[in-house]
Each structure stands twice: as C-alpha cells, then as structure tokens.
Length: 255
Image 1 (cartoon, rainbow, N blue to C red):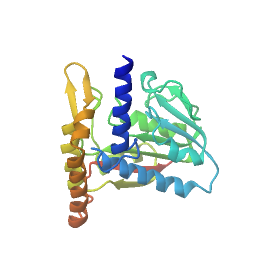
Image 2 (image 1 turned 180 degrees about the vertical axis):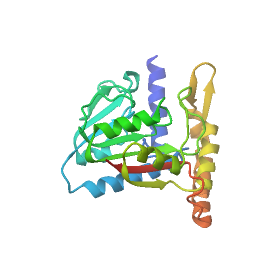
Image 3 (image 1 turned 45 degrees about the horizontal axis):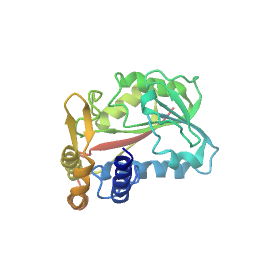
Image 4 (image 1 turned 135 degrees about the horizontal axis):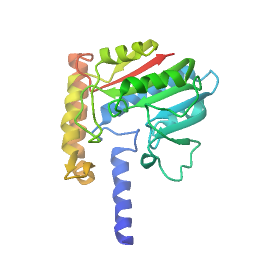
C-alpha cells in the first residue's frame, strides 16, 4: 500500500509539472483555453478593485476554491459554499466553509460585496432561483461574477443540465434585477472544437460511476494536446470569429 501511494505521489508530481496546477493550467491541459480565459477575466476584475475597501466574497459552488489566490488580496472575508463532500478537509487558508447550495444561501440579505458562480449554473436545478439568491445576498452596488459553458461535452453527470448563450445570460441577469452587465467570450469555434476533442478524448465514463479522468492518457498525449491547443489559438486569431461559437462565457453584473 505504501509503495502504491508513493507511486501515485510521483505520478501526480509529474502530472502537475506538465499540466500545471489548476487554475494555472499549461498549454498541455485539455481545458487550457477555458481556464486561461477565466483566470484573465478574474485578474482584470481584481485589478480594478485593488484600491477600494476589502470585500466580503462568497464563492458559490467553489469546492476547493481554486481562485482564492486571485481574490485574496481584495478579500476581507472569503466564504465558499458547496456540498459537504465537495469541501476539502483541513482547509488551511483563510476560507470560511459553508455547507449549502446556490438556490438557498444561508446568508442575510445585503451581506456580500462579491458573489462568484464559476461553472455552476449549468449544474443547478433552478438557475433563476440561484441568480435571484445572489441578488438578495449582495449589497447594493455589489458584483455578481462567474462563468458558464456555451459549448461543452457532458460533465459531472448526472448533474449537467444546460448550456448558455450570451443572450440567455443577459436575460437571466436582467430579469433578476442586475444591471451594468458585461460578458466576455473565451474565443471562437476553433478553441471550442479543441475543447470538445480533448475533453472527450481524456474523460471517460465508467459504468455506474459517472465521469472519471484518465491521467495516463492525458500524460501520454500531452504533446498532441499542446499542438491542438496552439493550432486552435492561431486559427481563432486568423479567422477572427470570436463571438459566434465560444465554448465559455464570463460575466460581471451589478446589483
């Protein structure tokens, strides 16, 4: 058992060295384009807020809070809300873990300065109620930010229910009281095609157990992954069809 655990640690060390540690994924990662776009979007948001007062931030559906490092410098209190099974044990960072779900947040109204919903709305039972709850919990002038897929293979089954166009995001936010809505896509059809090919190539469904990730396959085909990611990046630059078929959208909106 000890030998097996040691071997796994070595494999994971090599894997993280090549692929990067989420969200700092390298070009060899199957979801490089999506994560790179989200990372850039949040870095820009934090840069705009650096000189303001520290914020109360709630990361809804955040699990192990991969974007905490970005928001840490503007955070007064940082909460993550998720199911118990998704929250890491022995969290050592200054993160307050709260068991719950997006449609019913256990916070007072007008409590938070920023609520983040990153790759969450496609998995909730009622996205309208989730957005309405975010509006309730935010202070006046507070920011609701997040990301959702437009084009993506099925993932986290059986809890994968929907996809979003930019028009759907705007409609959803406006109908629930938000204004000053800004949406950014992560690229065009070639990056989207890369994600579809690579994600379905390295994720597989085990009978009765849902989605699993094939680490060995990802490592073996890392050079091919890098080639596909670079090629799709170049193709999107050349053909400039950024707004037609992105795989992912990020947004900010104000209460």
